[in-house]
Image 1 (cartoon, rainbow, N blue to C red):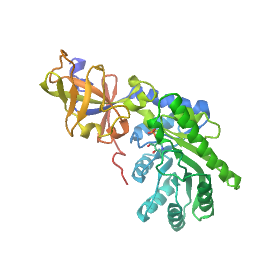
Image 2: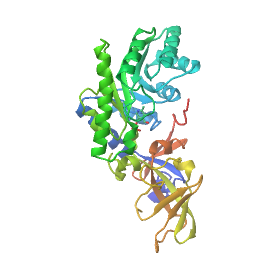
Image 3: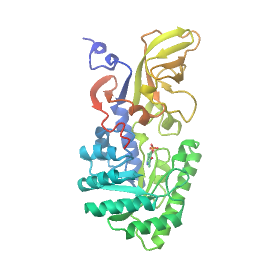
Length: 370
Ligand SMILES: Cc1ncc(COP(=O)(O)O)c(C=O)c1O
């Protein structure tokens, strides 16, 4: 059997398939671990990006102190997989979720965050009933205008409430500078990191002035992780997308397209006109995530001359330049705009080193929306 016909070769994997390149993954994990190590901050990768216990283990082995997740369902998967320290960075609301959080707290070091008295009070009641203590970070809005208290005064009030409530412990402050996705690489990202840190550290300082210790000052996001990690007073960074990277991260300067570990392997299934080709992957394979740059749905490896125009559910439509030969049956590998959303569409990921298929991993924490 030639390597091409080996079932262990990528060329034989049926399409569309999402493929994870282990060499690139390990390199990205190592690069971010070095960023945190050299800056002297803790690294708590957001695992909603990769959804894979196997990747979590690599991150922890490279020095991550624990994981971040958004949803309790994700936390449950990673605790089950043996991860002992998880931040649920999301406002947890409602009796059934408070119950699940307390149950998890018995099994692992679980921290969460809040930006309202309502969430703190609910967590306090549940923790008291369960006989556990829930550490809570106060989320501060540093310009993304999503969750987070507005400023130092509100942060102090919530920190006090957490400190004074039974069953809860104040753990520090947290922000997510998602506005970085609208910034220019280089100086633009430096400016976002600086204003994120200034507002987060301002809240931390106001809380300290009230005599409350602020152990953790945690800032999020891949685009600004390198910049914010170096700012004095920041104790932790929570990048997520860095492990796979994707077309948008490359555009923002987290490596290049050659560092992207996640790709979708597709096949040309139709050539209706000389300038149009159709591949067998649409939004079911890529998700509908738009790029921060343009209307393209990804980048075609080795074929920058092909323009990925648009997706329907099962079709990807490409523009083919005049005179280019592109036969039906040709396999194309596409770097998605957004790796996190892409992997969320797949039950399994094919794991490769170069063209060799190593394993198939179940995407254990996919689609955990509760
Ligand atoms: C609260 C929080 N922290 C960290 C991250 C990780 O950010 P990124 O995906 O930019 O690395 C996210 C991503 O959405 C987030 O919502």
